[in-house]
Length: 370
Ligand SMILES: *Cc1c(COP(=O)(O)O)cnc(C)c1O
Image (cartoon, rainbow, N blue to C red; front, side, top):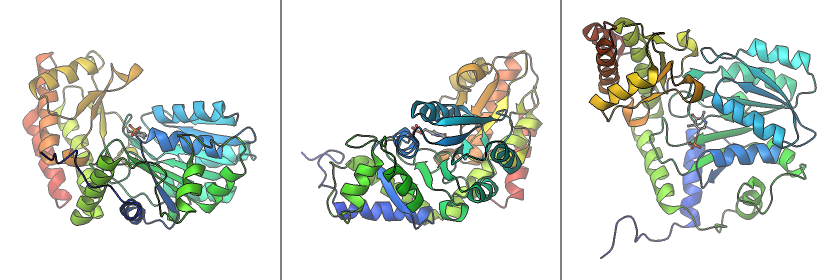
């Protein structure tokens, strides 16, 4: 008996290349786009290890936990690293980046996370890109949590290495990812004797064996199920329209913010300014005398399907994450999350007004025309 997930015809090189081209169109890029057969950490690490070495002077912008990881990889590569860390409740500004360049004119690599699902902030990449171009540095961007939720435009913004994953706002599979690579970035890698070669992390191997060989034959067995799921998810975005998918995320984020404020009970948006708040996910600050992870556990006990999580690590006590992305970027999810959190707060002696929260959600959606 044939099984729909198991007994598939082989995925051809042509199909693999066509999926890459579709992802490139989604990013509006003319750069090389490589699909990488693993979660997004694979190209995130592969790109840093390929592009950075002992001669590199990096500005590593830290607006959440991923930025910290990138700094660790950069130091491990032997790069000199200047960390620019901003509090997780805000975003970095182009002025802060410009000041860092003035203080360290030798900076030739910049790493930045566009949006952080883990902290709920988003950074002004277009403006930062202008200053990075003026500096002449190589620009590495983690757009895993922004793609599908807000514009990601590597060519327009001068991004040299742009990494995406499908499992957040794209509503796709987690086991496959992609990176767009500029000519400058390839040149930097080719000049780096420490860039991984004959390694699972090697982007240069894929360039040599796949891109430069005309994408005629796959160097490894393709991750077939993930590739088909990626194709399906890009197809679904194209059918709905990327603008529509992004608008769903923006509305969900705005409604969650407005709804949390109307809910009361001491809940507040974690990111202070709405312009710094990521459309992909909204973080909320629990009242000082309540534990965020307990509130989340209580809400999930009542409504297990809600995309709620407590903050990671040290943030677990104070941060609640509403992961309203992909199929969860809907008014129903936003309403459900606020109602469940409202009930959990009320049970713990923090009076809330769920009806007011629902009215604020409805008004926000009405204002956004959705
Ligand atoms: C989720 C996320 C990742 C991790 O992607 P994986 O595919 O789980 O490795 C990386 N960066 C950011 C900003 C994310 O939000």
